[in-house]
Length: 536
Image 1 (cartoon, rainbow, N blue to C red):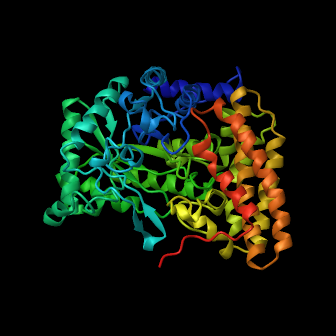
Image 2 (cartoon, rainbow, N blue to C red):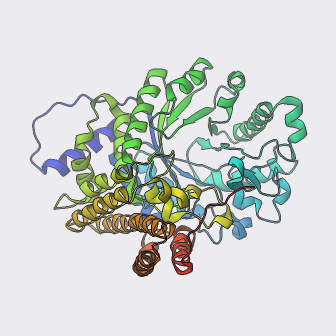
Image 3 (tube, one colour):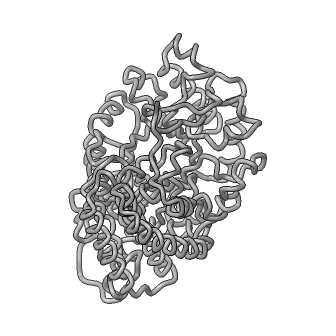
């Protein structure tokens, strides 16, 4: 590992200085032995193998040594094409090629299959409905949205055989001795099949017992279990009962997340753990980099203080995963830097490093635009956790669907001034001009520029939609019609370009990822102010 890290440093120096290297002395070692990236491939964007191979090469140069692909239903399980067919999926052969490629680059490709919650697509299958804790959607957050069945019934006699079948097909494609089984956000637990058991012994105890059953399955397969630590942290008295060889993944995505407090619980219980901050790219389209950088740095500081075994940068795809990989590279680089040495990480060096390592732009504009776009949301003077209006407004689902993702988007217009919306438009258009002056020197760099351009133009549509909503709310119907006419043309153009771009980077079709473009076109055609679902 030390030799590979040294070679990564040498490659960076050669790209910066060419063949005439400066005379220097390097004293270097990592703060965390395990430094990883986890990419969500389950919300609508399943990358092609070529895309993943290119990403792995970049991660190796960032001195990342662990890579995970967050999977719910997007591995091509032979018996379940009916579950993954419309989404695209990675095959065993593709995983084996990626695993071999990562191994050569000094990266461990860790299998990842959620095994308790987040199984909504699985539980739609008629063969598996009997394994669901609940079989019907139920209202959450005062009825503002619905929770759809997504959690396995832990006491159902068919649950463990189902998981065994998945594990036996998935795991042989990986050489890693670790396995992330997820088990986060088990929203439905105690509402259906396990209700009586939860009332008898407690929901936390039921959760822990099932976690231990999964652990036994992995022990038989000689795998070390990794799992998300959010649920067990709700039951601190049970943390000490975890098997001592598990790895708890302590996640949190806001700048203010209490990593130090939570990490301390795992440390005191002598449970190995990672700190797992995020890229803050999901439901933003172009990023929320101020939050991401603070979240990444805080996790590194807390993890180092409390002896975390690893640092895992998580990159989620909520809401159909409309944000492209190009938006994630700056948080990847910054996260890799603080995982290696937070004390010497300088945010001011981010743009030149990103330009040299990823965007490969002779004019040095692409990375500059990528960074600035990630701060544009501040022009709106609006804050809510886990999203920005730039991502949530254009992607908000129709109210009648009562979906969780971006459901707040349809009401943002009432809390943001037109002046601030126009300031955001100006800021995005300025960075689009900067981006279009870039001169990428490689094929991948040209694709990254295209991805940023499309994402920024989608973010602009969020602003236009809010202005249209404000015009309707004030009875300025002529203004609303003018905005709508222009926006429909722009949305159609983005839709065509997005569809052309899609197969160069991703599997299946873009329909799961970009359906919101049609939703907004339909809103404009109706000419009626859409309302978020109201309870009562």
